[in-house]
Amino acid sequence: SAITNHMPTAELQALDAAHHMHPFTTNKELAEKGARIITRAQGVTLTDSEGNQILDAMAGLWCVNIGYGRPELAEVASRQMRELPFYNTFFQTTHVPAIALSSKLAELAPGDLNHVFFAGSGSEANDTNIRMVRTYWALKGKPSKSIIISRKNAYHGSSVGSGSLGGMTYMHEQGGLPIPDVHHINQPHWWAEGGEMSPEDFGLARAQELEQAILDLGEDRVAAFIAEPIQGAGGVIIPPATYWPEIQRICDKYEILLIADEVICGFGRTGNWFGSITVGIRPDIMTIAKGLSSGYQPIGGSIVSDEVAAVMDSAEFNHGYTYSGHPVAAAVALENLRIIEEENVIGHVRDVAGPYMKKKWEALADHPLVGEARIVGLMGSIALTPHKDSRAKFASEAGTVGFICRERCFANNLVMRHVGDRMIISPPLVISTEEIDTLVERATKALDECY
Ligand code: PLP
Image 1 (tube, protein in one colour):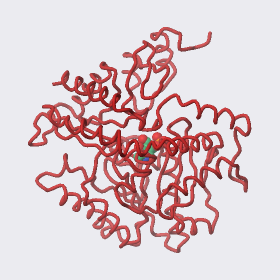
Image 2 (tube, protein in one colour; image 1 turned 90 degrees about the vertical axis):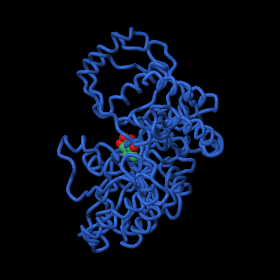
Image 3 (cartoon, protein in one colour; image 1 turned 120 degrees about the horizontal axis):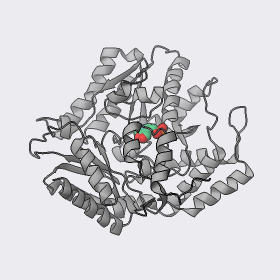
Image 4 (cartoon, protein in one colour; image 1 turned 180 degrees about the horizontal axis):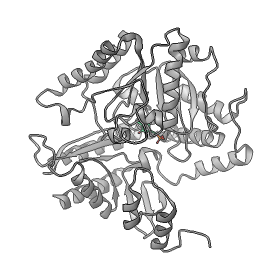
């Protein structure tokens, strides 16, 4: 018989455990507990199979920027599926959704980022970037420039290439990552690693590690530097103000391509269309996904500068995905961008929800369990600590307190994620001030229950 929302939770969980392998999960442990089953969602609220109404302070996986349940996107998808459900963009063909979306992205992206290479996800887009920057330098007669510098604790995806760019050691321990010619420098995480230095000095020192790496590896061997404007999955790590200007200076000085991974920061998350605008950089390539379609369809891509495109366009790039520029995904993304623009969603983040949330969020730093509480736009984090002044870590195994706190959030109908002992949020950008009150109330209650 059909498997539907109406089946008892335990039966659905048993089928899930029997047949579904979850990403980033010890499936054996999950099978004993039973996965949470989300059945529907509206606005910022999820409903689970037990009928609980849960505030989703993670917007799914940092992606449902315009909130759940927008019928316009469903209508566009249905119309596009009837008209042209699929056609490829490989063999000298194109279609209107790909033309319209690439044109719109060229208009929205800063500077001369005017050209889009589509992918199905952020991981795929970063794989494109690896091959693109190396091909770019080869076409310019400098094939030795193949090293990509990235950062420890960065997240750039989970494919072999993008997982290698990422700096998650637990990922590198499995499956043969990283690929050759990827080099990782330290992250600008002042609270955890800054010691006695001021945030400003620390930001400069960490940026200068890029210059040192270029000098050590050889300027003629380094192709690009990739980073998220604000590290997301690493724990929402907001760099000191001195960091990004110095990185830009170094990339300019040594002619290193700068790739901004905007998969989380893009499409309003930081209060501007792109995180690069918020932190004041001029990338040569931006990785996009997630908020591009608000997660309603899987789509990603690389937006590249006139200069990079001019070089790449001079030869065949032997690269592409069946779903590059998928017409249904592109049409849905375009409708999502129309909603963000016409409903002034970014203005809401910048002028209403962002400032309102910032005040309440930063006040969490007064909680006895919280070391720092920071937020930019609508991506924020708190660090849990047994001792605020010394910025100490819990003696327990890394992340135990964060895990307990996440479970207490869920018991209070709030989805927050933990990265080690950091708690992070990234709610839908359309969240109202009343919903922010509820979010912070529930987070505070969860913290009280952990203390
Ligand atoms: N880049 C960043 C900054 C991300 O946060 C993610 C996913 O969380 C990715 C890339 C990978 O995107 P995807 O999961 O769509 O492959």
